[in-house]
Length: 495
Image 1 (cartoon, rainbow, N blue to C red):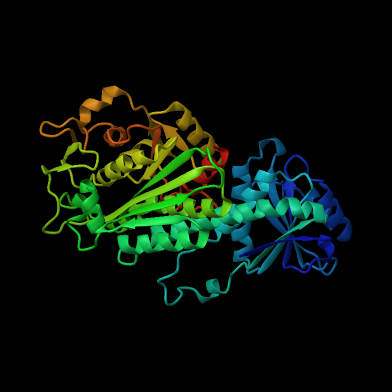
Image 2 (image 1 turned 30 degrees about the vertical axis):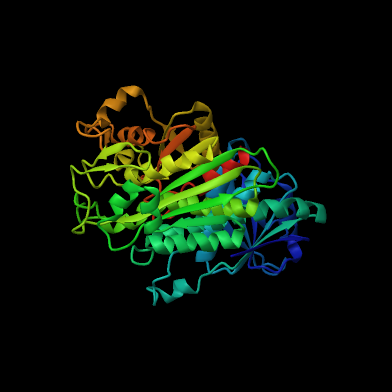
């Protein structure tokens, strides 16, 4: 969808519909009064019937019959002014974009009053774009040809002056850039395993780097062996596909900038290995690289927005397959850090590849490290599909993550990482084992990772519940959500 900003009078605008936001506690705003005058009181007469009350995610269509150039005015409910948040604007914008698309409209125009808040305008742009997202790359024919013809192609924000236009343009562009990064993450996560191997993920990272001016380094299998990424290699050894380790670097101009590292789990398909998963739902394990997708999507946005923070994106990627050479329960491997790990369950593989990635990241002497991983099913039992589980070693960094999560509504909930839990991952034959004692599974995963996230502030986000399967949102599909991109970008910009 093309988004533009224009100046002018909405009564003279050629578009399929003019959208006028209506507050539940103030249904007589200036835009409405102007529109009502043009329609000779018909809008007010309609409102007096009480059928439309301005509640959030409700709308009514009025036909102008030539009174203005647009054939329709659509009233969009926003709710009470005091209760409006950026997230409510997102939900309303997502609802509206979908509804107008489903009506078969090709263009819509939204007049913006001068008092529109910046974060509301950005939220509306993000949600309008994200709500129309579809993944149809592998469809050769449509189930419904009528639906194919429904495509909302243009959204225009109408402002009153060139000054207002110059102020809103960077806000709209920022929203568009963040939405594009989120949709990149969705595309990557939605790709079937045979269309997104570790090699192909690395190639995509190189494309993103070239397009945004990032530095990109990719370690192949021979380099990983040379450098001692033994746990990443151990997970990969059951697959015919080679692993990759991807490093993306953004460095702002000047000196003295803090360094933040974003680390993503990139299991492009997870069978569970020798500890084989059940067949039901295994197709969803193409999403097991959603942490890597979020990091790559965020790095694309960062490359465009160019914040005053040095950002390192680190992605460890492989398949987890049960081939004849696969690691076995009871095997012991030596990680990049030198710590030994007893493999008690080969389906706890994400933490193994992150162990090497987190240890590698220490060389950058980062001021903060955030890893994102679809690590445990236990986090879904704990938090559902509403929030990611957050655990870490630094309260200041945790607050930065929480603040960004609240602004973007990519919610997190902190779980404890007390030393009391350390006993659960102790091994009798190695330094640590890769599962806990059968309780507090999400925390056990983080306790394991903590052993390798040493020398820097660190927060782990378990996104297994939020990476896909989200319901009830107007701008997030039930397939890949792209969770984490907006949160990470917000955190970096607030740094």
